[in-house]
Length: 147
Image (cartoon, helix red, strand yellow):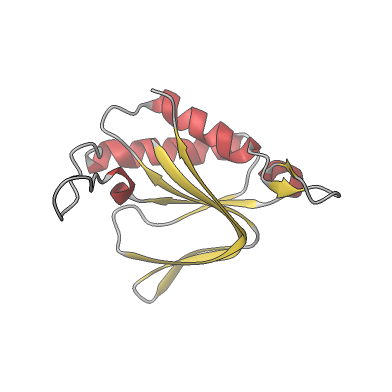
């Protein structure tokens, strides 16, 4: 799995004219699932997201986690993160999981994050979404799960 994680002051997700998610400060994770990813990778990613220390402490150092600051986790599925654009002009999505497999893995990330105590909001799987966010810092990381 691959995630692009941004520390945000706020974020929201719209599908058409419907607002499907809105969150205050926390982390917004755009998540891509590879065809060989399983529940172990999803659980690893969920644990990483809720415990990643990228929020400032009293000294301004990145030393606090999402749980420490009471932040919200936003999870939005994004298969294009698995796109390979090294050759040609059109990306290949050969490594991206089939939709049913990807949806189940993203749901597992959400489930584990909630079990760990994080409030979680989500986009709508497979929908054309508009994601608006205010990147705080800016802080942006790319996280790949171990295989």
